[in-house]
Image (cartoon, rainbow, N blue to C red; front, side):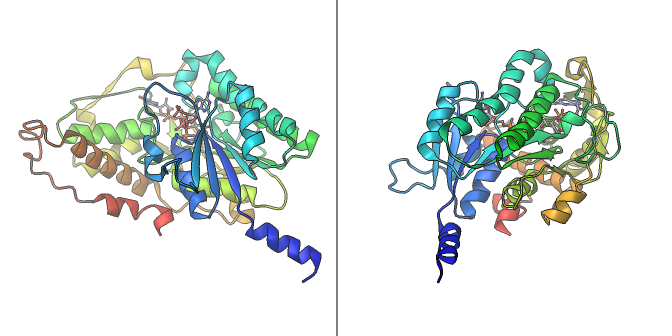
Length: 375
Ligand code: NAP
Ligand code: G4F
């Protein structure tokens, strides 16, 4: 075997190390699972919290006393450049996935400066830490369809101009361009994944999809009487988070760094989402949903729908779970979770819709089987 061949064999068999910021979030948890299954050693950057915030990755947790843990968590913060520098120097990752962010659009109007610090300048801190540490990892930036805001074309693709409508969207535009700038200035392998909305049973409970699926489950079980929402007219291109983390990885496996739109190409309104969620529990949402103006945004994004033709062609990526299946999966998971949480609360479910005799139609195992990682 000649030297070049030997080298490339060594490269392909070498254990790959990934660092994920935002590992405790929805996408971080799916990505960690995905990379562990691919044989990566995974480090997750997490910020210190006074209460546990690892619920989404507890099933992946390994005792740090284990002689060879595949997943390790390290304390750090996108607001703290010194922590990023230290982490990069010590773990020397081959791939970095920057998923950490203040990711709630409505909240970004309440904390615009903090959102700019973390969701915007946090990316710069990480890119600078890469330069300072002298390592050459591949870098993924979690860019967002929210950057298209007041859309300039339908559907949106990699060439559609940005017109952000929130402090969150503006911060993501900064991160997008600083990633492009570091790619062009310093020859970094840095990619933007412009991801459209993606959801799952692990979605944060204040995003509209999960708020609705959880609300439908709780109303069915008699735990909640009403569901307060904001603008029901906006339309989004919703996919399954498990499908989308695969696209992140695929971007970093390409020969050249490029930016990709990841989307399903279909769009639905909040009322479509309500129809499916409440139909799953055999109720009519119009009997339970109330409008509360506090959930409206100072500036709204009316319609997002992506054209992921480039990703389909170049990455061979496509979404596997339909909107209908996604929302039903989330309602089923929320029913299970609420039943488990309320188990033993005598009387709570007793005089409610199922007379306390509710037997979930789907076990946890069946729900897991929807995941692409167990297929
Ligand atoms: P998420 O569930 O809100 O997770 C955000 C993660 O960022 C959490 O782990 C959070 O930690 C962490 N984080 C927050 N502030 C941080 C800080 N100062 N330093 C370090 N980490 C911090 O969001 P997601 O849905 O998984 O989305 C992942 C990324 O993709 C985000 O950047 C989001 O903006 C972007 N994105 C999401 C979508 C979508 O539809 N889900 C679409 C496009 C782009 P804690 O657990 O401690 O809060
Ligand atoms: O679920 P949402 O909060 O998601 P939004 O604003 O589209 O942002 C999400 O997707 C982005 C990608 O496009 C990500 F970058 C971002 O991090 C986040 O994951 O709201 C969706 C729509 C909005 O039009 C909102 O006005 O639902 C509407 N809505 C109506 N009632 C509501 C509510 N949104 C929330 N969160 N809560 C409500 O009660």
